[in-house]
Image (tube, rainbow, N blue to C red; front, side, top):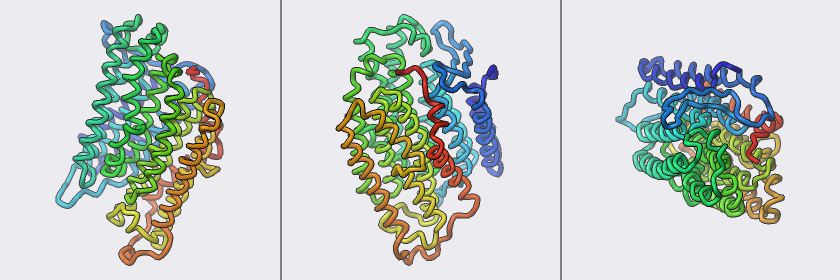
Length: 483
C-alpha cells in the first residue's frame, strides 16, 4: 500500500479536532462522530493490505524533519501496534457516541472544546502507536497526557482538580525519566539517530542496555500501571468523565505495555531477558493485589479501576514470559481489556447519570427498573472474569499457557489470587447492585434508550467476536520478530 494511511489517520483526527474546536456547540458532536467513524472505516479498509505473519513494519512512511539530529516523521505498524491502532479508532467511535458529561451545578463548559479534545486525544494515541522515531514518540506521549489532564480537570467530578493534578504529576515525572533515556540513547548509540529501526541495527553493550532499559521501564510501569506505581489510576478514573475513563482504560494504559515491548523489547533485548523472572514476580504481585483490593471497594468505578491493575498484570506476565504464545496472549489481553473495561466504564457512567452515585452499597436491585443496562453489565463482567466464548478467556488462557514453561507451579498464585478472586469480586458486585429488592429511592429510574445502547452493543459484539473467532487477532499479532 503506497498511500500513507498512518500519516493520514493521525492528520485526519488532529485536523478534525481543530475543525471541531471552531464549530458551534450544536454541530460539534455530529462532526466528531463523522470524523471518528471515517477514521475507523479507513482503518478497517487497510486490513486486506496488512500482510499476516510477516515480520517487520508495514504501511511505512518517512519524511525527514530535522536531519541534523536524525529526526524524521517515520511511521509504521506491525503485529504489536496494528491491533492497538484499530482498538483506538474503534473506541474513538464509541466515546463520540457517549453523551456529553453532566457537570456540577453552576458550571458550564463549551461542548465543542470537549468533543475536540476527545478527537485530538484519539489522534495523538494513534500517533504513539505508529511512530518509529523516539523524538516524535515522546512528543505524542506528552501531548496525550495534556489532553487527558484537561478532560479530567474541566469535565470531571467533584474532586477533579486533585485527581487531574495527581495524574499529571505522576505521569509527567515518569515521562521526564524516559526523556533522559531517549537523550542518552541518542548520545551513546552509534546510529546517531532517534529512529528505532536504525538504533536497532547497532546493538548496545549489555551494561549500557541495562541502565537505559530502566529509564524506559519506570515510565512504562507508571503508565500501565503496575503496583506500586498505580495509585494515580483510581482517582483519575473516578473523577474522569465517562468518555475519558473509556479511553484511559481502553488504550492509555496499553501505552505502557506497548512501550515495554516496542522499546526495551526491540533495543535492549538482552537486558530485558536478564530480568525476566523479576518482571514475572512483579506481574504476579499486580495481578493478586489488583484483585484483592477490588474486593474492598464500594465505589463501582474505583472497583473497575483496580480490576484494570489486575488485568494489566496478565499482560505484563505475558511479556515477562518471553515465549511467542505468551507474547500473543499479552497483545490479546491488551485488546480484550480495552474493549471490556471500556464497556464497564461506559455502563458505570450511565448508572451515575441516572442515579447520581457510584456507591455499590446504595445501588441495589437495579435489574427491576433497568434490565437492559443490568444484563449488559452482567455479560461484560462475565467477560472480564474470563468466561469462555468471550475475549477475556482467550487472552488469559494464552498468557497462562505461554507462561507455564517458564514459571510452572508459580502460576498457581495468579490463578487463585487473580482469576478466582476476580470472579469473586465481580459476582459479589453483581449480586449487590443488580439483584434483590430495589431500594425505594430508585423506583423512578428508567432504562437505557436505543441511542444509549448502540455503543454498548458494539463493544459486546467485539468481545464476543474475539472470543469466538480468536484466530483473527492471533494471526494479526504473530511474528513481529521480538522473540
